Length: 240
Image (cartoon, rainbow, N blue to C red; front, side):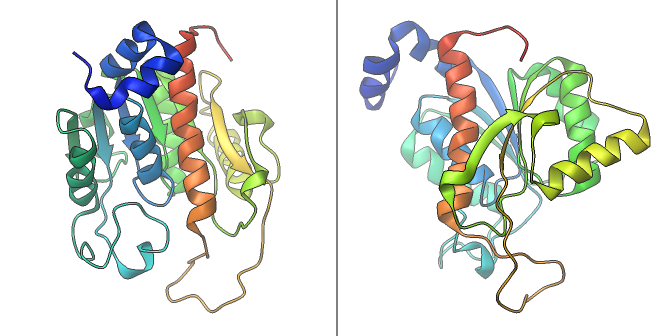
């Protein structure tokens, strides 16, 4: 029985589609400025079986853009803080919080083939390449976030198939990495990206840090959630 808070969702998409949303299994890698909002959108839309993966703790610089990052949660494990929040939205949800990184040493332990959807919101280039290849090889529906930092205009956030993404240094680096390795993704997949790229106007407080703001990162995250939701609602099993 669906909870009453889903009444407006059912009104829009119908009982059958809402039922499918409650049954799918989604795993989200990276719950920072993009991934945390993606998970929020999924749970509020009736997705009840979600695994969230992130190795980090909440730090002060997260507060400007990450859903679970507040003055009260600084120092806490990100996935634990996010899980606690999500259960206030959907108390019956099955939220598996995994405080670990996805990398070559841990990849096999996630059982990616057992999920219906994989959302990639991680930053590490090599780990991102591995996640993309792993999800594609497993035949799981994959949606991936490209770089969301150094942007101010949410109207420039777009969706495209990976090889058609333009104006994004991260996408370019991924494509170059795949070509150099000779290990290409075995399937096509959609990405959320923006072709805007600004210079940092301030001084970074840590190496390789880039400025980012919630009104852009959240749009990235909600767009990823929207890709999952639309795919389930439209029951589309065709290739991209």
